[in-house]
Image (cartoon, rainbow, N blue to C red; front, side, top):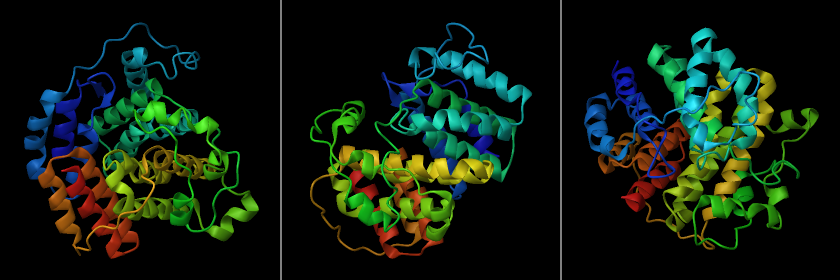
Length: 341
């Protein structure tokens, strides 16, 4: 299988490059093969491989019962990779995921949300077909998430916005200083008026069912973030992609998780979408020129761009469109590819 061949090629590459930029290759090739672009995968890797670095070396083994101290320590990335290789060698991948998902979920901001995004792509691939390279890729994703684990300030204190997710995203306050990178921007959330309410928790068990299941509500959040990119993506087209792709990763993982973890997953997915929106949204919308497209058109446009964010956003937009065939979802993807390109 092309995806397994690609993952084997990428196995000895590190999860980051140039300091802390993410290695998008495993996520991108999963999205490409998902939509039938197998014939272009290896050529895409050939063009991207020079950007990547070797897998980092470890410092010392992480004992199974002493995982809390190295959590969020990027210096221990190599140790985390070894740790999850060991975990997955002796335990079914679903069990490892069920154990580590609630431990990692509070740190959903890890690697500018790329930790959870990489795990989401790996789980989707495993749910399609379970192979050794895909299990190993899940371990790489979990290791990256653990090494860059980063919580969001004050998430979960206010009421979950149970109305229209697009209106809720529009109501998210913007961080005041948008001059620097995501870590600088997320650090401002703790002092941001309205943030605890904007990134609030889900309703109680008796209330939640009235507003749909966690997967239905997550799907609505993803679709809202895709649509909003059409009007606000010009502010930072690459980073605002993650307002959609992070909750989409959570949504892709839900089928592999125990039902008891679904509500917390929904809350974290919403908090991630709200955080990226707060960090990068411009003050005013700017509607794109309406250009109707097919799913094939937007996927091809993204693949032709060669940009991993464009490809992953198109992948997310097509998934959202499959659930709700709103032309704006495809317009948003086309516009994003043009902006990013």
